[in-house]
Picture 1 (cartoon, rainbow, N blue to C red):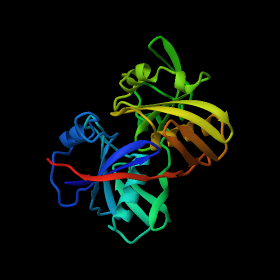
Picture 2 (picture 1 turned 120 degrees about the vertical axis):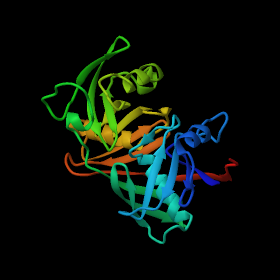
Picture 3 (picture 1 turned 90 degrees about the vertical axis):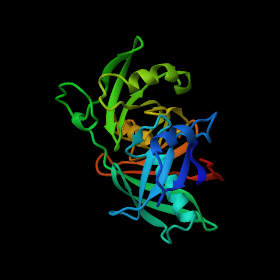
Length: 278
């Protein structure tokens, strides 16, 4: 089974043309994503035929759970199908569990370098996140949640998958994310678990963030997480319409006017090709 290893700002994936293939994708994701006994990645991306779009993407986390959407993953997905010659289009539509996403690519020397994704409009109603409890306000901004003896003020955003965003004063690299992240992810407040982002505001046009990713843990980047961060920052009037977000794996550019769709732009990189023997 042939694969391509790819990454978007350090968020890395194994991409497989799964059209016509039958596998236990849950078990395969657990094996293939393992960094010691497999290839190693933050997720497994499958290229599949679609009824409502040019292609369908499925994305499995290292723990075998399936994600509704992946912003870095869909950029790698677009580079894969175009660079591998699976389509002659430079702008494609991709069917996901979070709906059909429209993708624009930017090529250099015939290869995709940058990808801009319309990630759709954020969902801000408590029931859409989802979060448990009797919430009368929407959006939910600065909700106090005490975890590991620390009170976090969370803003909730669903970008096709759930996110909890907190803005902190201490440098993000000093925050105990590996300790607090899993407790937030699996807190009873979130019936479908959640992604968790910590953010420093560096200016109106610049944010710095780290992510604890649901089903994957610490990652160098998260595209949907960056979208949620941009939305939360705009809701709190920390940023303008366009903002650059620095994550440990690199920079992403986000655009959101306070309503309507969120646009995510960033790189997509091929690392190597190979064959999986099972």
